[in-house]
Image 1 (tube, rainbow, N blue to C red):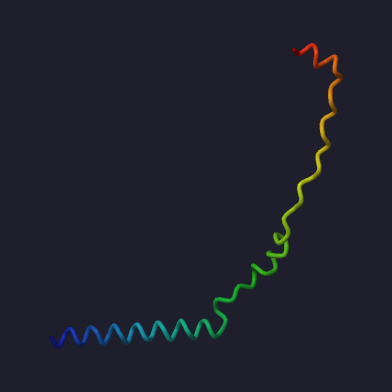
Image 2 (image 1 turned 180 degrees about the vertical axis):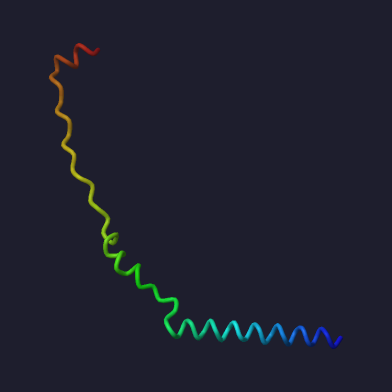
Amino acid sequence: MGIIILLISISLVIAVGFLLSFLWSMKSGQFDDTYSPSVRMLFEDKPEPEHQPEPESQPESANDEKK
């Protein structure tokens, strides 16, 4: 029974250590993204599709030949 209490207490100490190191790294700016904001402006606006001219209609005589 004593070994279980010892192992639980050691795991809690390790977990608290990881939590504190994570909080410290978040506070010090370790996970700040400095690359994406500079690139985001390049992909912000979606390009508008180019207007393609409509194909010219064929003369009616050409339509008669196809029938």
